[in-house]
Amino acid sequence: MNVNHLISDTVVRIKNGFISHKNSVSVLKSKQVLSIINVLEEEGFIKGYTENKHTLDVWLKYVEGVSVIQNIKVISKPSKRVYFSIPDLIDWRNKTNTFDILILSTTQGIFTDEVALEKRVGGEILCIIK
Image (cartoon, rainbow, N blue to C red; front, side, top):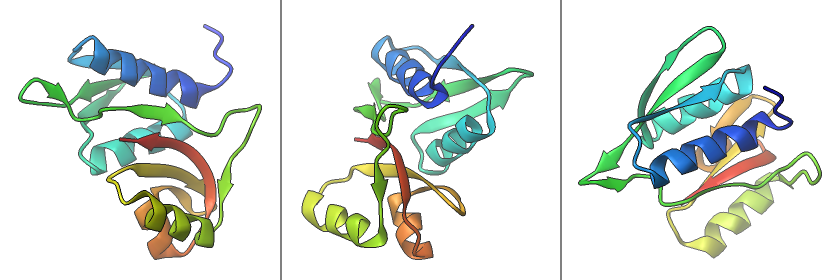
């Protein structure tokens, strides 16, 4: 299987899994995808995952039959990269006043916007979760 952008593929598989009320979805494994899945697990958006040789089985989480993730969207794409500095993250946090979470790829790893602000690093915005 040829996939041009693993992050987009992973996000779409998770989103489609929630839409069709699946218990789990299988995503292609890479270091970056594994880091994103770890962040999703730490933040309580998924139950967990199991690691296979080339894939990850991601166990989706529902509360009273409703998916925990209402919407997940890829922001940075190969054709258009989006970067936020620390002031950009602070402005975004102050302007949105919602419970949206950004997942960023920074020089220190992949984090949520909250952790990135604590560590005082900016980076590439991979996706947004509502």
